Amino acid sequence: MTWLITGGAGYIGAHVVRAMTEAGERAVVYDDLSTGVAERVPDSVPLVVGSTLDGDRLTRTLAEHRVTGVVHLAAKKQVGESVDRPLHYYQENVEGLRVLLEAVTAAGVGSFVFSSSAAVYGMPDVDLVTEETPCAPMSPYGETKLAGEWLVRATGRATGLATASLRYFNVAGAASPELADTGVYNLVPMVFERLTENEPPKIFGDDYATPDGTCVRDYIHVVDLAEAHVATARALRSSPGADLTLNIGRGEGVSVREMIDTINEVTGHHRPPTVTPRRPGDPARVVASADRITTELGWKARHGVRDMITSAWAGWLRLHPEAARD
Image 1 (tube, rainbow, N blue to C red):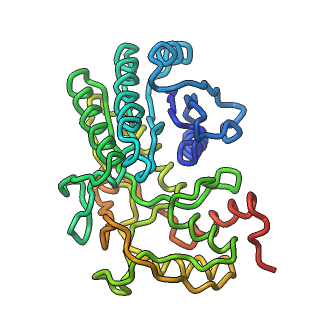
Image 2: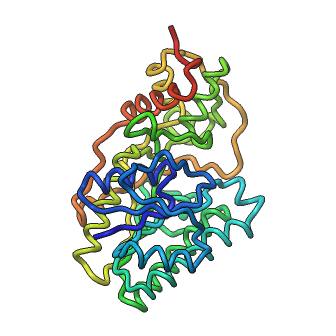
Image 3: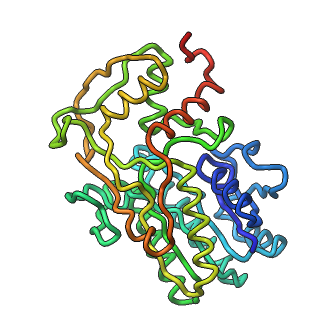
Protein backbone atom coordinates (compact mmCIF):
# COMPACT_ATOMS: atom_id res chain seq x y z
CA MET A 1 0.00 0.00 0.00
CA THR A 2 0.90 3.64 -0.35
CA TRP A 3 0.01 5.87 2.60
CA LEU A 4 -0.42 9.62 2.28
CA ILE A 5 0.68 11.14 5.59
CA THR A 6 -0.64 14.67 5.97
CA GLY A 7 1.47 16.69 8.39
CA GLY A 8 4.29 14.21 7.82
CA ALA A 9 6.97 16.90 8.21
CA GLY A 10 5.80 17.67 11.75
CA TYR A 11 7.09 16.26 15.04
CA ILE A 12 4.64 13.37 15.31
CA GLY A 13 4.20 13.04 11.56
CA ALA A 14 7.90 12.52 10.91
CA HIS A 15 7.93 9.68 13.42
CA VAL A 16 4.92 8.09 11.73
CA VAL A 17 6.72 8.33 8.37
CA ARG A 18 9.79 6.64 9.85
CA ALA A 19 7.73 3.87 11.47
CA MET A 20 5.80 3.28 8.25
CA THR A 21 8.88 3.02 6.08
CA GLU A 22 10.70 0.82 8.58
CA ALA A 23 7.67 -1.48 8.51
CA GLY A 24 7.98 -1.78 4.74
CA GLU A 25 5.09 0.52 3.84
CA ARG A 26 5.38 3.16 1.13
CA ALA A 27 4.78 6.73 2.35
CA VAL A 28 4.10 10.09 0.71
CA VAL A 29 4.15 13.27 2.82
CA TYR A 30 1.66 16.09 2.28
CA ASP A 31 2.44 19.15 4.42
CA ASP A 32 2.03 22.93 4.10
CA LEU A 33 5.25 23.40 6.14
CA SER A 34 3.59 26.05 8.33
CA THR A 35 5.07 24.23 11.32
CA GLY A 36 6.60 21.19 9.66
CA VAL A 37 10.26 20.94 8.71
CA ALA A 38 11.09 19.61 5.24
CA GLU A 39 14.43 18.20 6.45
CA ARG A 40 12.55 15.73 8.65
CA VAL A 41 11.26 13.94 5.55
CA PRO A 42 13.66 11.23 4.28
CA ASP A 43 15.03 11.67 0.75
CA SER A 44 13.34 8.41 -0.23
CA VAL A 45 9.88 9.74 0.67
CA PRO A 46 8.11 12.14 -1.74
CA LEU A 47 7.13 15.50 -0.18
CA VAL A 48 4.18 17.43 -1.61
CA VAL A 49 3.84 20.96 -0.22
CA GLY A 50 0.18 21.88 0.02
CA SER A 51 -2.78 22.69 2.23
CA THR A 52 -5.58 20.29 3.08
CA LEU A 53 -7.91 23.09 1.99
CA ASP A 54 -6.62 22.68 -1.59
CA GLY A 55 -8.86 19.97 -3.00
CA ASP A 56 -7.35 20.07 -6.48
CA ARG A 57 -3.82 19.52 -5.22
CA LEU A 58 -5.00 16.72 -2.96
CA THR A 59 -6.81 15.04 -5.84
CA ARG A 60 -3.72 15.23 -8.04
CA THR A 61 -1.49 13.92 -5.26
CA LEU A 62 -3.74 10.94 -4.52
CA ALA A 63 -3.81 10.02 -8.21
CA GLU A 64 -0.14 10.63 -9.04
CA HIS A 65 1.11 8.53 -6.11
CA ARG A 66 -1.65 5.90 -6.33
CA VAL A 67 -2.50 6.41 -2.67
CA THR A 68 -4.47 3.59 -1.05
CA GLY A 69 -4.59 4.83 2.55
CA VAL A 70 -4.33 8.13 4.44
CA VAL A 71 -2.97 9.01 7.89
CA HIS A 72 -4.26 12.49 8.64
CA LEU A 73 -2.14 14.38 11.18
CA ALA A 74 -2.15 17.88 9.66
CA ALA A 75 -3.96 20.25 12.04
CA LYS A 76 -3.62 23.30 14.23
CA LYS A 77 -3.18 22.10 17.80
CA GLN A 78 -2.55 24.87 20.33
CA VAL A 79 -5.35 25.08 22.88
CA GLY A 80 -4.77 28.71 23.84
CA GLU A 81 -4.52 29.84 20.23
CA SER A 82 -7.76 28.02 19.45
CA VAL A 83 -9.55 30.10 22.09
CA ASP A 84 -8.29 33.30 20.45
CA ARG A 85 -8.83 32.12 16.86
CA PRO A 86 -11.73 29.65 16.82
CA LEU A 87 -12.71 30.41 13.22
CA HIS A 88 -9.18 29.66 12.05
CA TYR A 89 -9.16 26.34 13.92
CA TYR A 90 -12.52 25.26 12.52
CA GLN A 91 -11.39 26.26 9.02
CA GLU A 92 -8.10 24.35 9.20
CA ASN A 93 -9.14 21.36 11.28
CA VAL A 94 -12.73 20.70 10.23
CA GLU A 95 -13.05 22.21 6.75
CA GLY A 96 -9.58 20.94 5.84
CA LEU A 97 -10.66 17.46 6.92
CA ARG A 98 -13.90 17.72 4.91
CA VAL A 99 -11.99 18.70 1.76
CA LEU A 100 -9.54 15.85 2.31
CA LEU A 101 -12.29 13.27 2.84
CA GLU A 102 -14.04 14.47 -0.29
CA ALA A 103 -10.87 13.89 -2.32
CA VAL A 104 -10.21 10.56 -0.59
CA THR A 105 -13.64 9.10 -1.25
CA ALA A 106 -13.67 10.35 -4.86
CA ALA A 107 -10.31 8.64 -5.42
CA GLY A 108 -11.51 5.35 -3.99
CA VAL A 109 -8.98 5.28 -1.14
CA GLY A 110 -9.84 2.45 1.23
CA SER A 111 -8.38 3.36 4.64
CA PHE A 112 -8.28 6.54 6.75
CA VAL A 113 -6.51 7.02 10.09
CA PHE A 114 -7.47 10.25 11.89
CA SER A 115 -5.22 11.96 14.43
CA SER A 116 -7.57 12.91 17.27
CA SER A 117 -6.73 13.90 20.86
CA ALA A 118 -7.51 13.23 24.50
CA ALA A 119 -8.70 16.86 24.46
CA VAL A 120 -12.05 15.48 23.28
CA TYR A 121 -12.68 14.24 26.84
CA GLY A 122 -12.33 17.62 28.57
CA MET A 123 -12.21 17.17 32.37
CA PRO A 124 -13.30 13.57 32.95
CA ASP A 125 -13.91 12.70 36.61
CA VAL A 126 -12.77 9.09 36.32
CA ASP A 127 -9.74 7.10 37.38
CA LEU A 128 -9.08 5.78 33.87
CA VAL A 129 -10.44 7.33 30.68
CA THR A 130 -11.94 4.71 28.38
CA GLU A 131 -13.20 5.23 24.86
CA GLU A 132 -16.73 5.21 26.30
CA THR A 133 -16.00 8.10 28.71
CA PRO A 134 -18.32 10.99 27.70
CA CYS A 135 -16.66 13.62 25.54
CA ALA A 136 -16.94 17.23 26.72
CA PRO A 137 -14.10 19.24 25.11
CA MET A 138 -13.19 22.51 26.81
CA SER A 139 -11.57 24.39 23.93
CA PRO A 140 -12.23 25.03 20.26
CA TYR A 141 -9.24 22.79 19.54
CA GLY A 142 -10.85 19.88 21.37
CA GLU A 143 -14.17 20.63 19.68
CA THR A 144 -12.58 20.44 16.22
CA LYS A 145 -11.06 17.08 17.04
CA LEU A 146 -14.40 15.69 18.23
CA ALA A 147 -16.17 17.13 15.19
CA GLY A 148 -13.45 15.54 13.07
CA GLU A 149 -14.17 12.14 14.59
CA TRP A 150 -17.87 12.55 13.78
CA LEU A 151 -17.07 13.53 10.21
CA VAL A 152 -14.66 10.64 9.69
CA ARG A 153 -17.09 8.11 11.17
CA ALA A 154 -20.06 9.39 9.16
CA THR A 155 -18.03 9.30 5.95
CA GLY A 156 -16.96 5.74 6.64
CA ARG A 157 -20.50 4.58 7.27
CA ALA A 158 -21.76 6.28 4.10
CA THR A 159 -18.99 5.14 1.76
CA GLY A 160 -17.44 1.98 3.22
CA LEU A 161 -14.15 3.77 3.97
CA ALA A 162 -12.34 1.93 6.79
CA THR A 163 -11.64 4.49 9.53
CA ALA A 164 -9.90 4.88 12.86
CA SER A 165 -9.71 7.83 15.25
CA LEU A 166 -6.68 7.75 17.54
CA ARG A 167 -7.00 9.75 20.75
CA TYR A 168 -3.46 10.71 21.79
CA PHE A 169 -2.59 11.51 25.36
CA ASN A 170 0.61 13.47 26.26
CA VAL A 171 3.33 12.85 23.69
CA ALA A 172 7.05 13.21 24.45
CA GLY A 173 10.45 11.87 23.40
CA ALA A 174 12.15 11.37 20.05
CA ALA A 175 13.41 8.49 17.91
CA SER A 176 16.57 10.52 17.19
CA PRO A 177 17.72 14.06 18.01
CA GLU A 178 16.90 15.47 14.56
CA LEU A 179 13.25 14.40 14.95
CA ALA A 180 12.79 15.98 18.38
CA ASP A 181 9.94 18.37 19.12
CA THR A 182 11.04 21.94 18.35
CA GLY A 183 7.95 23.56 19.88
CA VAL A 184 7.71 24.70 23.49
CA TYR A 185 4.06 23.98 24.20
CA ASN A 186 4.12 20.85 26.37
CA LEU A 187 5.48 20.13 29.84
CA VAL A 188 8.80 18.49 28.90
CA PRO A 189 10.12 21.19 26.51
CA MET A 190 8.69 23.90 28.77
CA VAL A 191 10.79 22.56 31.66
CA PHE A 192 13.82 22.24 29.36
CA GLU A 193 13.44 25.89 28.37
CA ARG A 194 13.31 27.05 32.01
CA LEU A 195 16.40 25.02 32.89
CA THR A 196 18.26 26.39 29.87
CA GLU A 197 17.46 29.91 31.07
CA ASN A 198 18.68 28.95 34.55
CA GLU A 199 15.18 29.48 35.90
CA PRO A 200 13.17 27.12 38.11
CA PRO A 201 10.48 25.04 36.39
CA LYS A 202 6.90 26.06 37.13
CA ILE A 203 4.15 23.98 38.67
CA PHE A 204 0.67 25.38 38.10
CA GLY A 205 -1.04 24.49 41.36
CA ASP A 206 -0.11 21.94 44.02
CA ASP A 207 -3.45 21.66 45.81
CA TYR A 208 -5.18 19.12 43.57
CA ALA A 209 -6.73 15.93 44.96
CA THR A 210 -3.75 13.82 43.87
CA PRO A 211 -1.02 12.08 45.91
CA ASP A 212 1.44 15.01 45.70
CA GLY A 213 -1.09 17.76 44.96
CA THR A 214 0.01 18.27 41.33
CA CYS A 215 -1.83 17.25 38.16
CA VAL A 216 -1.46 13.66 36.96
CA ARG A 217 -1.17 12.84 33.27
CA ASP A 218 -0.52 9.87 30.98
CA TYR A 219 2.64 10.28 28.87
CA ILE A 220 3.33 8.30 25.70
CA HIS A 221 6.65 8.05 23.85
CA VAL A 222 6.33 9.35 20.30
CA VAL A 223 7.98 6.16 19.01
CA ASP A 224 5.24 4.07 20.62
CA LEU A 225 2.64 6.44 19.19
CA ALA A 226 4.09 6.03 15.70
CA GLU A 227 4.07 2.25 16.03
CA ALA A 228 0.41 2.46 17.07
CA HIS A 229 -0.29 4.18 13.75
CA VAL A 230 1.36 1.32 11.86
CA ALA A 231 -0.67 -1.26 13.79
CA THR A 232 -3.87 0.69 13.12
CA ALA A 233 -3.12 1.19 9.42
CA ARG A 234 -2.51 -2.53 8.96
CA ALA A 235 -5.71 -3.38 10.83
CA LEU A 236 -7.74 -1.14 8.52
CA ARG A 237 -6.12 -2.66 5.44
CA SER A 238 -7.32 -6.10 6.48
CA SER A 239 -10.76 -4.96 7.69
CA PRO A 240 -12.73 -3.09 5.00
CA GLY A 241 -15.41 -0.88 6.51
CA ALA A 242 -13.83 -0.94 9.99
CA ASP A 243 -14.75 1.83 12.46
CA LEU A 244 -12.24 2.13 15.31
CA THR A 245 -11.85 4.65 18.13
CA LEU A 246 -8.76 4.03 20.22
CA ASN A 247 -6.92 5.67 23.11
CA ILE A 248 -3.14 5.86 22.68
CA GLY A 249 -1.51 5.97 26.10
CA ARG A 250 0.31 3.84 28.66
CA GLY A 251 -2.43 3.62 31.26
CA GLU A 252 -0.04 4.99 33.90
CA GLY A 253 -0.33 8.34 35.63
CA VAL A 254 2.69 10.53 36.37
CA SER A 255 2.38 13.76 38.32
CA VAL A 256 3.84 17.05 37.20
CA ARG A 257 6.16 17.07 40.20
CA GLU A 258 7.36 13.54 39.42
CA MET A 259 8.05 14.54 35.82
CA ILE A 260 10.04 17.60 36.86
CA ASP A 261 12.03 15.56 39.40
CA THR A 262 12.92 13.03 36.70
CA ILE A 263 13.83 15.79 34.21
CA ASN A 264 16.15 17.33 36.79
CA GLU A 265 17.76 13.96 37.41
CA VAL A 266 18.23 13.15 33.70
CA THR A 267 19.56 16.60 32.77
CA GLY A 268 21.70 17.11 35.85
CA HIS A 269 20.28 20.58 36.53
CA HIS A 270 18.56 19.98 39.88
CA ARG A 271 16.45 23.17 39.91
CA PRO A 272 13.61 22.86 42.43
CA PRO A 273 10.30 23.95 40.87
CA THR A 274 8.28 26.94 42.00
CA VAL A 275 4.55 26.73 42.51
CA THR A 276 2.26 29.26 40.86
CA PRO A 277 -1.56 29.46 40.86
CA ARG A 278 -3.60 26.89 38.99
CA ARG A 279 -4.37 27.41 35.31
CA PRO A 280 -8.08 27.55 34.54
CA GLY A 281 -9.43 24.30 33.15
CA ASP A 282 -6.62 21.96 34.21
CA PRO A 283 -8.19 18.67 35.38
CA ALA A 284 -6.56 16.94 38.36
CA ARG A 285 -6.07 13.61 36.59
CA VAL A 286 -6.32 12.39 33.00
CA VAL A 287 -4.97 8.87 32.47
CA ALA A 288 -5.84 6.59 29.57
CA SER A 289 -7.19 3.11 29.58
CA ALA A 290 -5.22 1.50 26.76
CA ASP A 291 -6.89 -1.90 27.04
CA ARG A 292 -8.91 -1.66 23.83
CA ILE A 293 -5.97 -1.15 21.45
CA THR A 294 -4.07 -3.97 23.16
CA THR A 295 -7.03 -6.33 22.81
CA GLU A 296 -7.96 -5.37 19.24
CA LEU A 297 -4.57 -4.69 17.67
CA GLY A 298 -2.04 -6.32 19.99
CA TRP A 299 -0.27 -2.97 20.49
CA LYS A 300 1.24 -1.93 23.83
CA ALA A 301 3.57 0.92 24.72
CA ARG A 302 7.17 -0.19 25.27
CA HIS A 303 8.89 2.98 26.52
CA GLY A 304 8.79 4.58 29.95
CA VAL A 305 9.02 8.17 31.14
CA ARG A 306 12.80 8.12 31.56
CA ASP A 307 13.22 7.05 27.93
CA MET A 308 10.96 9.91 26.85
CA ILE A 309 12.93 12.50 28.79
CA THR A 310 16.38 11.18 27.85
CA SER A 311 15.60 11.14 24.12
CA ALA A 312 13.84 14.50 24.24
CA TRP A 313 16.81 16.04 26.06
CA ALA A 314 19.22 14.78 23.38
CA GLY A 315 17.10 16.57 20.80
CA TRP A 316 16.94 19.71 22.89
CA LEU A 317 20.74 19.80 23.30
CA ARG A 318 21.11 19.52 19.53
CA LEU A 319 19.37 22.89 19.19
CA HIS A 320 20.41 24.36 22.54
CA PRO A 321 23.96 23.16 23.34
CA GLU A 322 24.24 25.89 25.97
CA ALA A 323 21.84 23.86 28.13
CA ALA A 324 24.38 21.11 28.77
CA ARG A 325 25.79 20.77 32.26
CA ASP A 326 29.55 20.27 32.74
